[in-house]
Length: 86
Image: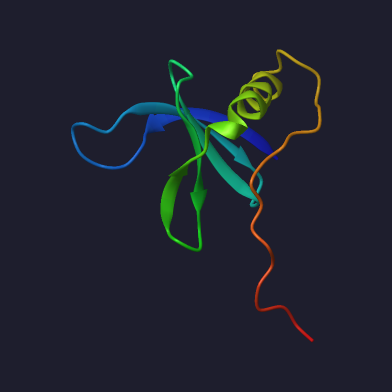
């Protein structure tokens, strides 16, 4: 599933308001409302990572989630699988 929503990045009074893009259970990305900062949640490190190389892909993801664009292939950070069965 693909979902976009607005919220606070972090906690506290100085947390920026951002748009989040959730790609199923695979990735959670964010972009500031002015589009100047883009990043993703790193589950291994349990923290947000700024990575502006995903800026255009996140913008396209928002357009698809908002039904303003047809579904398309998106580039997103996907962690390598760990602890699989043998």
